[in-house]
Length: 91
Image (cartoon, rainbow, N blue to C red; front, side, top):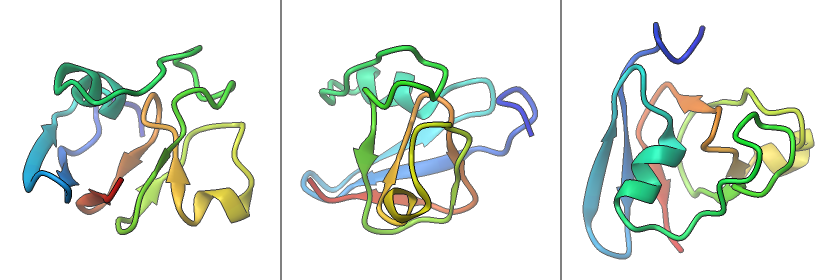
C-alpha cells in the first residue's frame, strides 16, 4: 500500500480534543506539522527515527525501517506509517 492508494484515517490529539484527518496522498507527519505539533521531520523516509511519535491507541501500518517490534507497540514514524484505525496521541 502506498500513500497514494491508502485509506484516510484520523489522528486524535487527546490533550486538546482535536481530531486531524490524514487523507490519501498526505503523510501523517505533514498533517501534524500543519497543525503545529512539534515533530522533527528528519529524513522523511522512515529510516532515521527523528519523527518517532508515541501513541496510546491505533492499528498502525508500520512502514519504517528504524523501529524495533517492541518500539512499534507504542511508537510510529508519521513520515511513512499509516493506520487502519484512528490513532490516539496523548502527549
